[in-house]
Length: 474
Image (cartoon, rainbow, N blue to C red; front, side):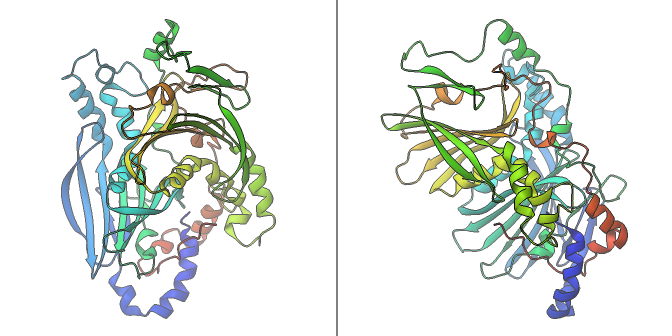
């Protein structure tokens, strides 16, 4: 979390040690048009460009760039407010029988315009992962003060060992990609990455009660009418594949899911250490069939709150992480732990020796539950891993199939999952279900509100503020 008051306090110490010449180069730049402000080491060059979205909309984008020696600092702003009209227009030019064109489900919309907007951050991250890089950091976060959801990513560039620090935001249907690339021996560019402020059309810094999830605000009352009709007519996941009698439907009432497996899965209990240090119970359901492996891992995050609050009581109360200064994060960062569970699981997977060939936002048809899909090429043996991540009722589900490179995609497994309610019935949601957005919809960032009120709010954002040290991940 970026807490501007803490940055301001550190400013006095670092500024005095670093000398005025360095600080004088850095100025706060504000774009009223693109509704943000940030510190740059000089006046940024603004480039007009076009951004092709995941589903084919060509959107206007502006790139604000400053190069300082071997370092580059940029903010890219993509206007997704136009995606709806552009993709609906595209849909009218393709065969109406295609679900993508006819908007059969109100979850996705005609031309998949809702998926395009909701998946904008993930799609931008996928584009970044196509570079020749190693992912050293990937986490969910929020913009302190404003309360806007963010994803943070750090990349080690294999060619020259430089480091890229990127943070992505989605606000009012605008995508913001804040990116700094510095030599490997440079410190983290906190003076840049910690400085952004997102603004309202009137120019004022934005403020939200409850963490702002752009994706969850699009259509809170949508109903998956098309799939409802299909399921009512007898559709849904098959109980078994008629062409392969080894595949059977397996249901876990305890872990609230069902899926097709090529046999009865072996169940292994294991501890899962969460991002913020809670040891949570997890169960892995696995079937191996020849050279292929199929598994569903279920991690019970319902215990994270109590465990992390207990952990927080054992650390110094002056630490913001321990005292729950902001209701956004909670004591011990338990809310961040739950909200970031899918991203954290994805980061763990990216630590393998792999190349990412697919990464996208999606939802579970019928149930309407948000998901992230990932495909990996395993460098050692060229096998392929197909993984899908879900969060439902504070349980994390990781569905993973690894097959030889010449095998077809394991759709009989990956397309078969159904998430259940505690009573065993199949989950149904009006509106796409975002587990993170449901935790505390009325929370107020009371700690930072008091701090900002005492400082006058904007003082903590002035260009003389030096970089905040990067928050260490335990």
